Amino acid sequence: MKKLLLSALCCLTLAGISQEEKAWRFGVQWGIQGNHAKYSGGMEEAHARFHQNPAGNGGFGVVVRYDHNQRWMWLSGVTFNSYGFEYALAENYSLMTPKNRFTSIKSDIGAFEIPAMIHYKFNPNCNNVRWVIGGGFVESFITSQTINKSVSQVADANTNSFNYLNSTTSVNGGNYWMLRWSIAREKMYKRGAILNASFIVNVGFKDIAQSSVNYTIDGKTYNHDFTNNANFVGFRLSYFFRPVHNWQSAAKKHAAAKSATVTTK
Image (cartoon, rainbow, N blue to C red; front, top):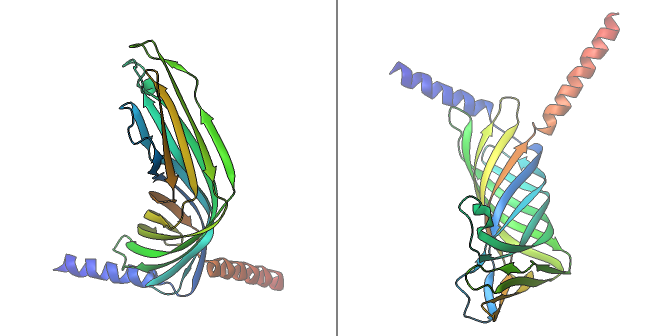
């Protein structure tokens, strides 16, 4: 019974300490995601050795959050994100060098983003860790460009023929609005900093790029077309510094202490 009371007191104390009212925090964010593309044309038949993979991409930037109260928080910032297409051909390889199992090419598409999201914060536990869920819009700015990728011909040990893999990607420039949801687990530290780990889902409404891939195996040439509308699932790790008003309070206290020292002298 005594342990239960102590545990309850612990939770209530930490919950009281962690109350946040109209607090601004700046932070840095980093993450990775798997960006999906969909088949849109060309030959429906693909060789068994051909792979169209979710493009592994990353994102980073500066973010700002406004904790309105203990329950609600808004998030924005300026971040850099990347999308793309990735293709591969399976190859004969040595078990001593498994990294040579695939010949692959990848086209990366950079984008600047401004998120506008609202989050709901659950009660923290005794370790000041809580769940946070959120959703909102992201405005993404992308530059128009054409990306050509290719790999050298690779000998096929079975047929002594040659494989050749190349792609042409056309990126549609402009700004795009997207939907984004997140579910996060975050740790609040005593001095006000926050470490946030989020799982995010991004949904785009328009195609941001088209890609055509060509390859030749056993004397036969294949070509396929794919489109990318910025759909992805990913992970974000964010670190938010202590609230701005804490910095201001600390600066005022320092100035007051310095003034008091001068007056005493």
